[in-house]
Length: 374
Ligand SMILES: Nc1ncnc2c1ncn2[C@@H]1O[C@H](COP(=O)(O)OP(=O)(O)OP(=O)(O)O)[C@@H](O)[C@H]1O
Ligand SMILES: [Mg+2]
Image (cartoon, rainbow, N blue to C red):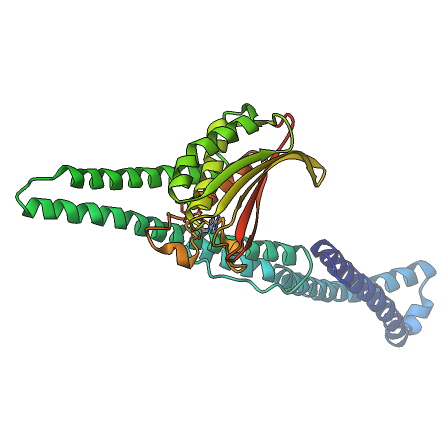
């Protein structure tokens, strides 16, 4: 049986009262009995027997009160000492987990996140300690994520910066003249850097749930037609076929057109980037798809590309995650595209699902809720 701290205090106090009350009653009983026996032996003599009943009562009263003085004093000293000792012991036992927790909290306050307090009871203290352990675990994870982010950002910024630095140094050594094509390369790197910084900025906003959305009724079909049109040239250049199909008329969602466009641009850029020549990319729109009691508009981006191994799928939406093969700079990006898409869609109350077969292709499915959303 598990007792709560409140019940434990109640039981302990009850026991204390019982012990003191019980011993008080028993000692009284025993002592009074022995007192009268003693009186009979010591005080019942000729003088007592000759005294008037009033005097006899007076003699008895004086005798008993005289003896009781020491008895009461001894008893109160004993009860006081027992009560104090018991209360001290019980308060020490009951507050032990709290003292362990305070020590652990102080360590966390000093920046040590590696603390874990063993959970030894299922009472309120046990729950508080469990919550504290969960909290420090989450803090550790957040701290790890922050360290990884700083390392990743530093890594991503270093490459374009060192390219620029090298080119500028070379130009300087070659007599200060910078040819236009080199300026173009430098400009490309600056654009790459600004895009990266911008991506990181919106991603951090979206992750913190502070992404401002300018929601308005958006005709998804028309918007996707436009997006497909925009990426068609890139698909053609890569020898890929791309087309759009819809099972309904216009599908209207309450969404921020700029953010939604970025989601599908990211998905389509991936499909183009990770599909070899002669491959096919199709975008399918479906209206009124029910999922867990909510009606969604569903857009699938399907490619016949290199696919993604099952072990990579759970990490795909992580910041900076790139499948190893795609890490080389000429095919790989920064690994932020899917993370941004995931957070943008979530900010709209939707979600993205992915299914893939290596060397067969990949399907990214975006679910956007239909109707009037907050
Ligand atoms: N359609 C796809 N087919 C195969 N692999 C894909 C596909 N989409 C994404 N991936 C894999 O998932 C990884 C993460 O994609 P993500 O869009 O986040 O990053 P990226 O394309 O490498 O860089 P960025 O989009 O930031 O320029 C990619 O590096 C790639 O390995
Ligand atoms: Mg991408």
